[in-house]
Length: 65
Image (cartoon, rainbow, N blue to C red; front, side, top):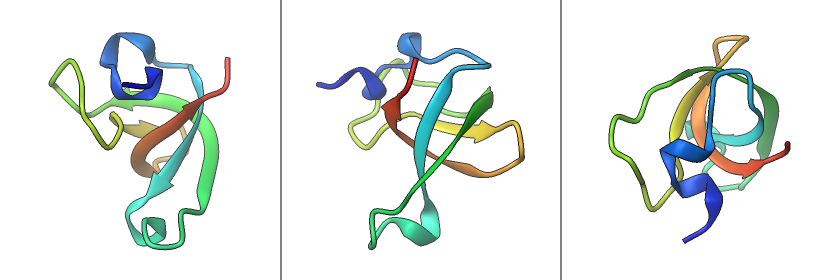
């Protein structure tokens, strides 16, 4: 599994690219900084769900740092 599927690789303030719910079909990624981690499990096959500092919610697809 890739790094973005594990909760311990993502911290508040991490620079990430997420896929928003409405962008899942197109695969468009949104870049930002993690405000909160919403997934409680240690891993998730589609990516850890986070809320960015600007309030957008989606699953992490890429960790930038």
